[in-house]
Image (cartoon, rainbow, N blue to C red):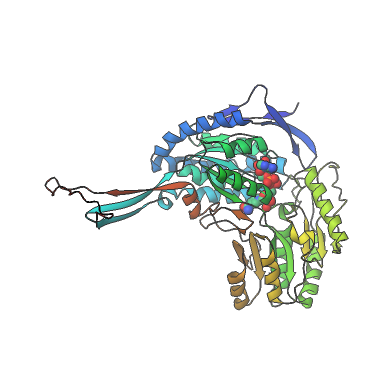
Length: 501
Ligand code: NAD
């Protein structure tokens, strides 16, 4: 009998008598392991009422009281590392070391939220005129709706939500229906950390829950991470309902390699950043752009054996480099992308199709696949393919490499490998990406810097984490005040616009 995964509302698991539900799979085996509750508009209504009430008190709690919870959450994350990695691996398919890497970055986000009292400080000026002082304070916005993707079941929620909670908001979170168990574990840790019931709520489900969040008048802001098509919809619908919305979306990340680069290091970086987590990362390197024919030939020869040496296996195989993709549909989509690239004239250099992993005939496995001679008219350049198929493009000059990178609709991360400071400087100035790496293949910034792409990799002007996330999760109130002495002259009537000056 498979397990049933519930919602989490008001500090406890919550289920509805005749609710909808959907299957959850273990991608490493292809088995249906559980069923997940799918909420409705009514579930979201209930969660918002609970969150609004709990949030009013939480928003008035002292910084010290709130920080005590965040510090405790950090300790609990560390104490539960093995359990969380197992839960992530089972439903996502990523290997245990990869899951622990994800948790490390989640903890970093929680640590940054320990700075909430500092980064949410207001502004003050005395005597702006007539003994009037003006100050601005940052206040929580209220109930925040969070919608997250499957590919980082804990890291994305942790970096997205911990600062929101730390500055006094409450949460209604819809996790990906592909990885619902991690959400319940995370909710359990918040409760154990001492967060008052009702501040952190999980409503499991699909588009119906998303729409209920976007339409709900009790939700002040929506933070989304996921694909570009869904993110654009969420931004448009959420803002039409007068919410602030920050949506962090797809990527197609280019890696430019200059002739002077350390090619051996660049080849390893491309294979690691390109195929890690079965290429299911928004910051994965998708396309390798060696500058000039000679660099392309040498780099191609270096990357092929490294790709062929990669081992694919179930999430709990200690020697696997990466695991399955998340679903049967994902596997089919990647196989279609390979067939399409062949039709469009790509040169298939490493073919990962038809991979069989011993003992797991129904797992969603795909071997690493590499195409050469990818051009800008091909699907493999134009679209994000969320699985282990990568491409080499062949710009003749640095200018052409910049042009190919900037012509893409996405601008999440772009990287350059070079030993020349001038090329690196020009790259960082001219490339239209939110995150840029120089000899760093995955330029995911530390939690105390702002994270977010440019162009169609982000909708709205917020950042997912870093100091700017505090701006997104707070509203300014600006107070002008004056405390006249008892014997001051009475204020005369004045209809002038600026009587305080
Ligand atoms: P997705 O867009 O399919 O799903 C994201 C969330 O939206 C899920 O909770 C899902 O249930 C919901 N959703 C799906 N379809 C919907 C619809 N039609 N209407 C309303 N809601 C819907 O994304 P995914 O496959 O879970 O995750 C992979 C995508 O996320 C990739 O495109 C990846 O690049 C992106 N991503 C981006 C970042 C970033 O920071 N920019 C980080 C991680 C992942």
